[in-house]
Amino acid sequence: NAGVTQTPKFRILKIGQSMTLQCTQDMNHNYMYWYRQDPGMGLKLIYYSVGAGITDKGEVPNGYNVSRSTTEDFPLRLELAAPSQTSVYFCASSFSAGGGAFFGQGTRLTVV
Amino acid sequence: QQQVKQSPQSLIVQKGGISIINCAYENTAFDYFPWYQQFPGKGPALLIAIRPDVSEKKEGRFTISFNKSAKQFSLHIMDSQPGDSATYFCAAYASGNTPLVFGKGTRLSVIA
Image (cartoon, rainbow over all chains, first blue to last red; front, side, top):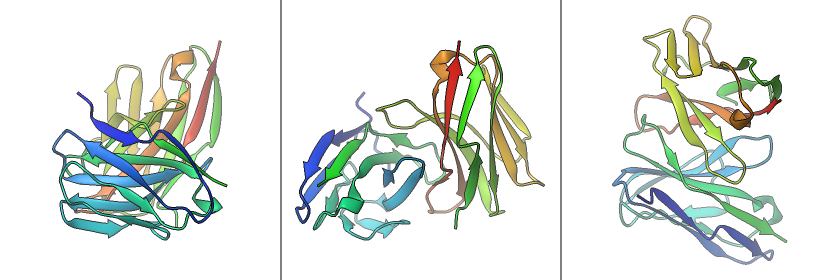
């Protein structure tokens, strides 16, 4: 039972480069989320989706884009990477909006 | 604005002692309050959750106390063990499609 799978686990980007963080879940959850975690700052919501084809901005969406073409996948796109995007990124999913969320293992991204 | 305020930021407890982490909220529409546990290098994992129709929920050594009138809830870890050393996040949710909001986290260290 894989749960929520994120790839890659680690990545170093140069300023201005772009990349896509992959997230897939095998629990048939409608709700999926992307958070970033910075030391001492908790989890900040970047984007979320309530189902295939539906996405919405969270607290810190600038510099990111998402798409949700299938129930399983929710990739996060970083365009023109900046040092401020150095963080640990977590993808999560839940069966319902108020249900417990399952998190992936995270992607540690460094922008230099 | 920070919707869920968590304290303390860090906590050191002797083995066998009681760890107490507090959270406060303003939005009276919140109706689901989970706690997440995160070990280094891992994603957060749901630990225990409560709804406001009860004042306390206990699961093993972990207890949530909920005070609706004060808009506060807390996590108590009884007989704390070194294996409980982790970062703990409180969260809150309001019915609808809005996602969970998280506190900033508490880093707990249980020392022998």
